[in-house]
Amino acid sequence: MWAGRLSGAGGYAVELVRSDDLKPESWQHMIDLLDREGQIPIIRLATFKDEQNQWWTAPPPDSDGQDYKSAADRYRRFFDAIDWHSETVLVTVGNEPNRPDEWGGAPNPAAYARFLRDVSESLGRVTSVKVLVLNGALDAYAPSASFGRTYAIDSERFMEGMVAEVPDIFERLDGWASHAYPLGPFGEHPGHQVFKIDDVRPNATPRKQPPPGIVNRGVNGYEWELWKLGQLGVKRELPVYVTESGWRHSTSQVAGARDHDFATVDDARFAELVGLAFDGPASGQAEGWTPWNADPRVKAVGAVRAGRPPRGLGPHQPAAPRSEWAYPGRVPVRGGAGTGLSWLPRPRDCQPCAHSLAQDLATGNPLGARPSWPPRGHQTGAARMAALPGDDVPVRYPADQSWACTRA
Image: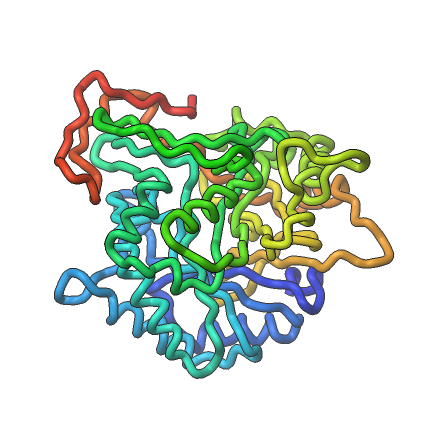
């Protein structure tokens, strides 16, 4: 397995497991390969894609329309049916549930909180392995706004909505998953970071400003999320897993990619940005950011879709875990190559060359880019959708309330 050969023993491999593919006999082969290569699995639980609407379906609730115990128990049975060859496995439950294309076109913090609660409780009963549960990382760039028949919820309102439904939801987690993307979109220096929440609702109230230095957009975007967890009553400090980050890389662009115009980072610049994000400048102090390797809370940093680019999108280049380097990996699973990520511990006797890494990735296995916000097709226009879940008073956006798309 290529990922294992690159990472060596002690690395990690990330794999998306869909709810319509919970077949232990199929996935056991992948777990056996990971064990053979000495890798630790990180499983991202997903539903499946609605091809007509181009969004991931929301998980099906129980007959009461509220709980998700049946869906959660299917995950438990899946995990119990596999020989994991390890004592623990990390699981991130869902992905960016505050986006419409990740929750059936209609993100719902209350529903996601119940789903996360039921899944975490069910996975806690797994006997084949100890499951460490992470949240589904939020999209810090998503605004509270509507787009035709869909809408998004900003990360603050989403977190507040989760706690309103399940007050101890974040206390149930073993770690915090974050998508700490650089500004740009996804092309700027690590020192360029901001706190910003976009809420275009007519009745939107000003947000509480965090202390100076706390940002929600940038390579340390998890800073604000951890601060917000404290504001919501979480007493303990959760370890951070940046499960997505990266820069839009020009050399490895796929022809006709929708975000081609935003991919401006060449090989040399990419190498510089990666080095700065992890270790800071060669001399002097990092100003405006904390290098990931200098932040003991950060346990790992990974890249989205490291195995193959999503259709129609250009590639990111990857970041890597704390004190480690990341490489893309194609994990053999039933039906073809899966989307995997392996992490290589840094050798003590040498310093890996980030420029060479960029070149290898550009020519060998491009990484998939995450689209900018809003979704394609919503350049500008009136926001017309009704109030978002959790609003006290139903609201319709006036015809002149618009949101400008960042995509040409």
